[in-house]
Amino acid sequence: MCNVLSNKVDAKRTYREIKLLLHIKHENVICIKDILPPPRRRDFDDVYVVYELMDRDLSELIDSKQKLSENHCKYFLYQILRGLKYIHSANVLHRDLKPANLFINANCDLKIGDFGLARTSFSSEVDFMTEYVVTRWYRAPELLLNAAEYTAAIDVWSVGCIFMELFIHEPLFPGRDYMHQLRTIAKLIGVPNESNMDFVKGDNAKRFLRELPKYEKQSLREKYPMVPPEAMDLVEKMLEFNPARRITVEDALAHPYLASFHDESDEPVCPEPFTFNVDEQRLTEGKIRDLIYKEMLQFNPRFSVQS
Image (tube, rainbow, N blue to C red; front, top):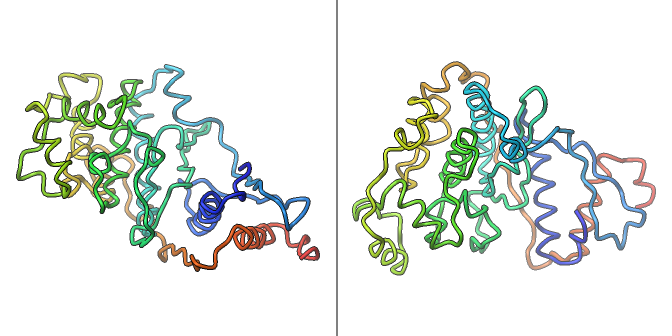
């Protein structure tokens, strides 16, 4: 992570990601193996985090056009949901799920990574969903409509997009900008009616939806016949326009499509929620540098003599 301690925003994001990954310990979440100490404690701006070794990310596999069996797709989906269940149980939203942030190895083990944009679901931090939060193609409608409040359902939407991409080898909703992204979604799954717009609070957002052509929901099963019917049933539940009607991670794991993998006793939850309590007023780049250095010492205690 180069030059991340040169400004407060990147420094805080880096420290949060380190603390979060040290808290979340799960087979389907990437693990920190080491944080390398810098040559000099007082003026380092780069942070070198060593993660467990994986062979490639899911986007590379998709781009390779390598044909995946249905069982491969199903197993990848199961592992994403299994890891996400643990993450959400820690009151954390990933907020940037996409193929490039899902890492796999030759055994088809999958681990969720890149928590730089993750936040606690009860965070009071002022945080506007910008272009940098959730790559547009995997962004839930409520984020595109600038919802002030959002839930774990945003991650479920992203998973639905990723799962479809495994089958069709191209993005499901390849929008050029946020308005085109909404139109692309609406053309495929339809425009919500008034009774299904209760999650949209802003007048401009409501007006935009009302002014869209009255797209009817397409038959995904006819459009994508390569996706098994039971898999498509789960996809349609993950890609509900209204987040309140979207399937939860727990219910997705219990869906009949995943019956061959689902075992609730082997789908643990986090023992306690993740909290990120820092004094915003007193938090400076220098203070964050000291905090990160302390985390480095947990992996490299012999360097404590330099403190």
